Length: 222
Ligand code: 0O2
Image (cartoon, rainbow, N blue to C red):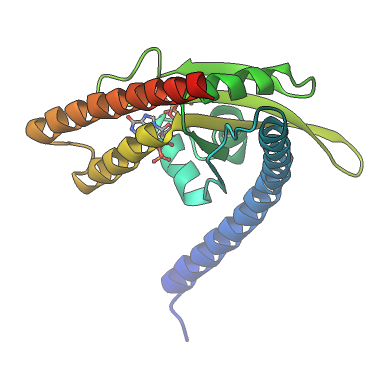
């Protein structure tokens, strides 16, 4: 025979588990639509890339990777923003639940893509953060767009936000390493390493400039 107090605790735990399960099911249902938004954006970007290849004999996109943020990362970001953990807050305040990262060879490709994306009638660019023109203090560079795209479901149309990060290969190389170091040192990068990263960001920028000059010279020959 289980004592009344223990029985009460057990019932509470079962209630919490059932609640968590139903929350998780609701989260999964709400997040499902972000996959469709990513499918649409990926198709649009592939079309742009192939069209440029066809017309200009040049691919603005070197590499493209998309992902849906995991519920655990969404919860972490909500906590970081000091918000209660609800699906409503996630949908309203987390703009990178669906994310695409594009790497380009040249800085000019980044703005070519930005303009082409902005010209599409069914995409609304709702926020632009240009960390290339205004890099972050640590040296981070990238162009971030938050766009909204309509997803046509069986009985309604849903506007879904997608974050698009566009950067050169050199910027991406830097950002991947900095991201690893940031988490390895639990977000407190030692000063010396911070300085080295800053210098590496400048070297990455120099490389981008040098590659552009070489390409321009080759274009003059052809
Ligand atoms: P993680 O770990 O990559 O998932 P917002 O509420 O949208 O205004 P947010 O999301 O911080 O605030 O906007 P921002 O500045 O556009 O940054 C979004 C993403 O850009 C980050 O996602 C990173 O992926 C990347 N990013 C921004 N700053 C840096 C940086 O200094 N170094 C590196 N390596 N990446 C950066 P998350 O979810 O914050 O992080």
